Image (cartoon, rainbow, N blue to C red; front, side):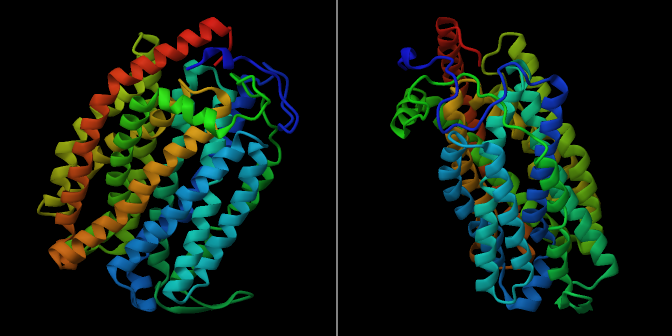
Length: 462
């Protein structure tokens, strides 16, 4: 890397108006973080509720497992990942808060449109649009959080933000479970103003409501000053970003592929585990939604906060690979529980195996992006975050639900063999992740050392 290119530079023409460097208070940083967390929860509520509605949507629209897998996977993930690249590029060049606000409005309207759908084509288009809207959030949020917090606390801060994955997914299951107790999701209801709609369609209208208060809270925030900038013309050329990435290609490849495999395991499980309990163990949707929702909302945040704390703690002890090291050990510990869960003879015993698996699989979600922020200059953080999200979501969110459905349909050829599909896909993906992360440890240490050397030479702040 040409370290002469990188210095602490002032805002340039065309940048969002920043506050003065150092003006961000501790309280305000946390205030911003929890608003971003609320928006992230809302985004996962929109995308995750679909997993508990497989049965009623299949029966009323007339879809197969593979078509539902497409809606839960590629229809969302392909557009989410593709749109994330230009939106990550924009996050390095314009107001990140404005980008988030516009994206949130777009994905909420698309969620409502999905609820109005009555054909597979309509549902697929609406799901694609949800993906485009939600792609605006996380690259901007990662960049914002990196500017709001001290580098020693970024792991914890991004882990708290990452709680949105589990709080949102858990709320989706919990809300879906509670609604199934009071409403038949495949029955038509005639309500004031909105008219006649199926029960499952009303669910998508309900989950769109939180956008209103969250948008009002977002308007109370101001764009923070950008730290660790590259002193060029104020806008980093894409060529410079790729040259920098090439210098750290070993780290980026091992990091991104390893966490993408963990994402495939995680998203595949979360999409189909409700149907596993319904088909294999005869649980009702209400029981599945309540049990999984509470477990996810409790154990997921505990796991992700634990990962952030451990990552920051080991960093202070001198482990430059701390974030990846913690994730590697968590993946190894997950294996016995993840493998046994679908093979247990009763629903209760499967659920008991699932509990530690949820905790361990959640550990990496905050510290994985934190590791990237630790060796990337500020004006590249949105782009590297978008690239990271592109790969993990294309492989994890895009292929996870779809591969598992295809394995069920094409290999085992029976809806009742879903437990073997879970075992095959999640087990294989986790083993591949363990290999990639093991190879990445020395490469991450080297990248961190190069970045720390640059900070000392330039006198910049991370």
